[in-house]
Image 1: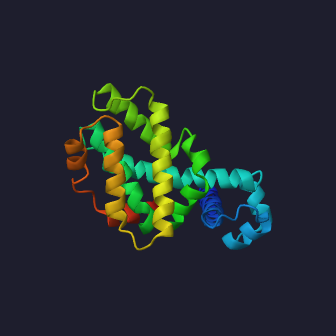
Image 2: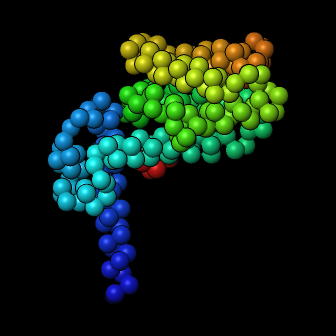
Length: 218
């Protein structure tokens, strides 16, 4: 019996922390980062004292929530590209899936859009993975760019603007729009028009599986 007590305590702590992160993610998606800690704890259905057992303040919580959401999604992108040998295709598939995310997972999309500048400079999440993929493609001779970090600036800006456009214009087809932007980016990164078009016509993994795994990760 004694050995079970710490296990129950740790599970309770984990549930409390997860509830706070989930509540913070919802506030981030709504662009409401100025709410008091009390409102966050009420949304999470935990006590005020429990909050400070996990976080020094709401700024730390928001940072953890952002990193958690984007890192979990980035892990899924990595998993879905493990069987791809071409680094240009790895980059393209991740961008194409993320573009579709804006409609299919609007809450996570809004976290990305509301915190885009900070996330683009982060060493975690999808921006860091995009930089890694660009650098890998350059080393493999698939992309030809002088500065991978500057290329990332264009890629991140394109993804954020695409997401905002899809939110503002629900009549647009997110798959068509995303693939067109991806194709243009591939040409900018050094691929021929025909090859960029061919890569963007390749089938994508099952998005319902992505969403299911993302939900469980969050």
